[in-house]
Length: 461
Ligand code: ADP
Ligand code: ASP
Ligand code: MG
Image 1 (cartoon, protein in one colour):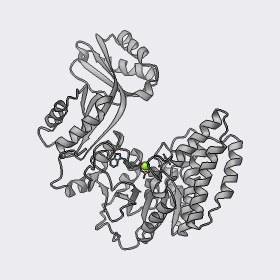
Image 2 (cartoon, rainbow, N blue to C red):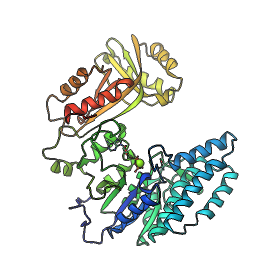
Image 3 (cartoon, helix red, strand yellow):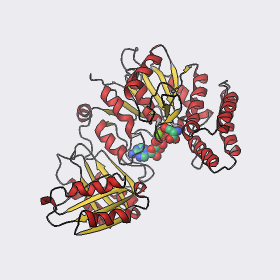
Image 4 (cartoon, rainbow, N blue to C red):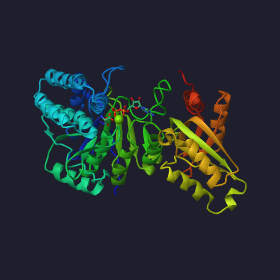
């Protein structure tokens, strides 16, 4: 791994021979106007040679993303309801963009193929992937770049497990022969050629894989915010931007709910030492956030705030287990975790105290199993008592500078107490760069605003 650091980010990276991989999210390719901005950005720097695009996203607040329409179409199919209208809406959006850009990307022909596949009962993954596929065809045609399909290049095994080595090799071979290309994000193929998608937001992963495969100078991730912000802008009004952040901090924040970049987009580029630059398609003059190695982030972060960011998610259940002399009883924790395994439920966090153990579980895994699990813990693990807290949110306050500062937890707890928010659970990760608190769902936004105000400044919201 060698150290890289792009200097001024305005197109002076390397010696002109470098390759920049630029991924454009849904809002950046939502319609002809947005594609116009995207193409202007690509043309402004000759190094932006490998482009990855999402499916068209929302054009305005109440609009629907193409990917959501495609999943809706599949739901109609499964319910044996007519899906023609939804298909028409999707087709019209692509046809309109193709017409407004004045390109020929064979959209009408492509929809004839899609329609035939739908009649044969196409899979949800195939249907969802067509958003990215058509988006890439249109952008490639408009730019005059090669269209390179992700099918056969992003590889999964027959069970749907992602195959990094095969993918690196296939992408490297396909792209080394090209000067410039546009690829669809979000999907790849099983060995039999059928389509498999990543989870939602997965075009970020495709971008990272392409960056790794071509050994890019930088992986640019273009979206609708000027980089990673210290808190979700939908909760805190006008949060401060983050200039530099380490891969580790970013991963903690992404995992905990800051949805700017897919959490799995970080590994491939981190291993290769490729910096990620998150930027705003609507404000290309802003530098955005640069995600770099821990050492570089530290070097660059002089004088910055104690915390790097705040992120959170709703809808968890906490099962608090009490047992006298718990730590003296060999195998207790194993028995408790074994019970969850029996129910096929994964645990998000396991904070523990002297005689207590809490299990933090995302509600989507519980699905009617809670009573049986609690019953089993009481009986099989012979707990003294079990308490259940439902409708909980988890909020993570993250920052690599936290470990060396005194009083960070005190500031956080005082801030929450002052706005009357009860903390139901605390988990200070072993990484010492993360304090997670559990609060009631109803207090989620109040708590994030209070933490932001305590560490960063007054929240004007
Ligand atoms: P794209 O379609 O370009 O991939 P996403 O919607 O996936 O974009 O991600 C960008 C969005 O992430 C922003 O519009 C913002 O609402 C949301 N977001 C959540 N937390 C943060 C944060 N900490 N910083 C910036 N944006 C955030
Ligand atoms: N279009 C997909 C989604 O909406 C993938 C992506 O945008 O990254 O989840
Ligand atoms: Mg995204």
